[in-house]
Image 1 (cartoon, rainbow, N blue to C red):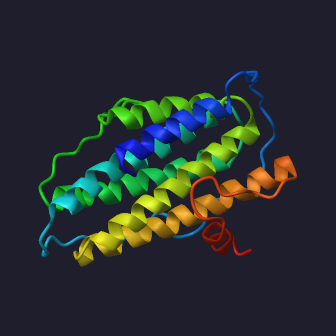
Image 2: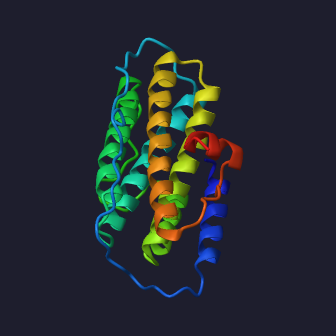
Amino acid sequence: MKPQTTLVLVLLLSASFSGAKQNRHRHGRQADACGQGCAATPAVKADAKLTEADARHLLYLREEEKLARDVYNAMAKLYDQRVFTNIPRAEQHHMDAVLGLLTAYGLEDPVKEKAGAFSDAELQKLFDALVERGSISRMDAYLVGALIEEVDILDLQEAIGQTQNENIRSVLEALEGGSKRHLNAFVRNYESVSGKTYAAQKMPQAEVDAILGK
């Protein structure tokens, strides 16, 4: 996701919950799991050239996966839901997979150790906006999760489409599969709580429906 796109998302998110009451609710557990294979990523061998575009995508994706992990961990403190305790573990594996690529190709890791802190200024704004929106209600938190996964899928697809490096392609394709499972999980929870049919927030509706098996 390009910085300009990130900023647009921040503005859209801010508008979507402007004036909403910041009531926080805790509910009983609702069944959900990340699904088998979320953390499975191919081994990395640094035997192919890295382009400038590859490097840019990997550095951004490393922090984007951290954003997902940190937002979900923040939601886990507000809502007693398995989806917010299971999926952050998978996001950590996604972070580790991208770190493996950064290490293999000698790129400096941009990730800051502190939760909710980012080197990319636009990702920092997006994190703050997502946590604020997710704090409104459990339903909003599920929508935040689904939005994160939609954007992550799009960014992974862009990176996959632009690389000629098979190491990168195989790892990112595995991460894309995990993000699709996460999207399914958040949508199931959202539809169960809201009684509504999920509407795509960033991806084309037809693509989201295909991922959801609709």
